[in-house]
Length: 72
Image 1 (cartoon, rainbow, N blue to C red):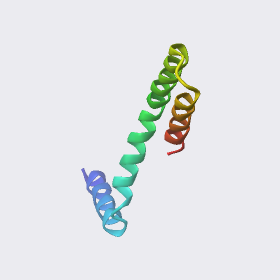
Image 2: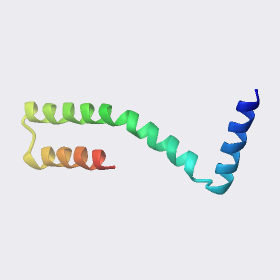
Image 3: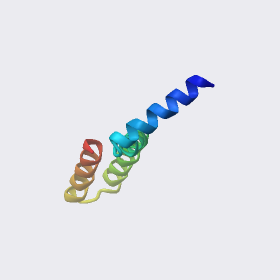
Image 4: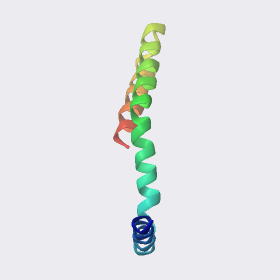
């Protein structure tokens, strides 16, 4: 029980010292978990656009969005 209280107190003090750390860490973890699914989804969109014979500008836009999304 004592170890839990010490850990909780440490988290509370760290959050008071740096209030943006935990929300930023949670957001980073969430986006990291979704990143592979975003890539798969956008790759599917690119393949669909290629198979439907869409214009090259549309396909390059999808490629740019995929790369930009992965960069973020």
